[in-house]
Amino acid sequence: MERQLAVTLISPYKLALVGVGKIARDQHLPSIAENPAFALEAAVSRNANVEGIDNFKTFAELLENRPDISVVALCMPPSVRFQTAWDALSAGKHVLLEKPPGATLSEVETLTALAEKNGLSLYATWHSRHAIGVEPAKKWLAERDIRKLEIVWKEDVRRWHPNQPWIWQAGNAGVFDPGINALSILTEIMPHGIHLQSADLEFPANSETPIAATLKFFDPKGADISAEFDWRHEGKQTWDIFVQCADGEMRLADGGAKLYIDGALTVEGPDREYPIIYQRFAALLSRSEIDVDLAPLRHVADAFMLGRRTETEAFFE
Image 1: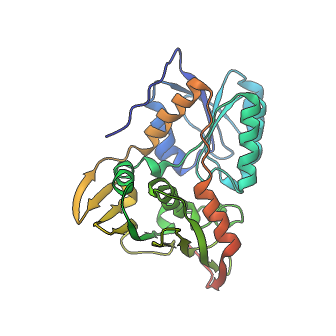
Image 2: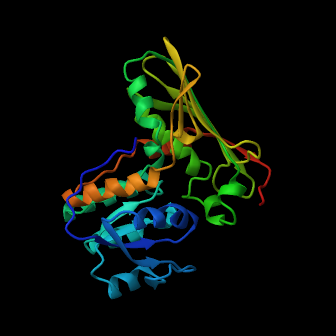
């Protein structure tokens, strides 16, 4: 069931969307349109426009021409996001960050400190945490003895990120762009803390970011926890988390859209992840609060620090 977040709304927040790519068009635009807390007033993109609103090529042009806009949603690649987020917060704008929230932990910590100093909302979004099966999975695991947890996240980058060369450039995470969705669910449903123990990363010869990764985690309670990410998978797209407990088994399938307990489908529903994100953002704005959880990004940073790197054949679309 979709969680409803109470918001005291006087008038819609004037919002600008920065970065008009596939995820912005597929998810952000419709989610903003259905939420009465927001009025989409402008967009910023070097190569695209959104009909019916003001469009600018640079964020500086937006700030100069639309000082009345109080909220910005940043959907550009993480490697180039920091300066825009900094400029927005410095200009008194509330900021929503698409995942991953930044290229480094330090960047996001710096932005959080600036938002706190200026009394502004900063929201680092993790859309997969709002998949319909995640909350009931978290409740089911809360008091259980976890013996094994395995993440299998395999998809075809050609299908989901066509003609997007930025994903192979340093600072944009490579296979961790989808893999961090799994890590955001993992850090949400685990009843206690874990940390990365080892990582094997595969880098195409022509890429600065990995195309595949295998992770092993240390669990202080002794569970065997692992994750396998692969962006070369041409078969059935797979976004699954399998958990074996002392008294049963659980599977989160299709990125959290389905929850199986002991083989029986117990939760299933439509994709409402991004609408819930904007409900949450409106609630934060009404109280000028900050929601920045760096746990998923920290696991990625640890993987790059600990990872054993292997060069694989060059990758071409």
